[in-house]
Image (cartoon, rainbow, N blue to C red):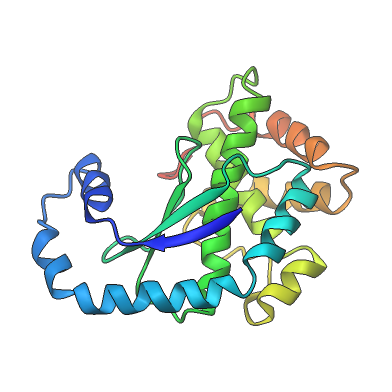
Length: 209
């Protein structure tokens, strides 16, 4: 898998239209053109130093190949982070981060997208809502970016199975899945046990449970 950083105003505009945000991004993109171009280059240079190792790591831990050869990360003027819920090989990160710090957050969004693809293609009969799959994907991303020796090597300055985040309603499930992840015999076992657990949270979504 290769990740390419891009600038895509139309993609971001579609996101905000979906969210009913009425602010016009055209002027903001115009004013931010120079910093977006520079950020795209710096993010790409920093990411390239671990792309292949990270790609192999995710395939090894999840037991699934990446579903696309190339993924894109759009550098955003407004959106801190955006994963794709299994619809396309595209994520989003905003321009405001240190390029090396951004690597962990970029990896996080990629893992969420990969988890959604795994679920869609191999667990389509789970009868989970998108919100429930999202919760499992978020927690899996936390696990893969913190609970392994490889993760400690990738970003030693930001290691930790964080419980202080924007989604306090997933904490109970997150804590239960930590032990399951650490003791898993396979990632498929981890997924299956997560599916069974998340069914106890029928109203799970990014907006709350």
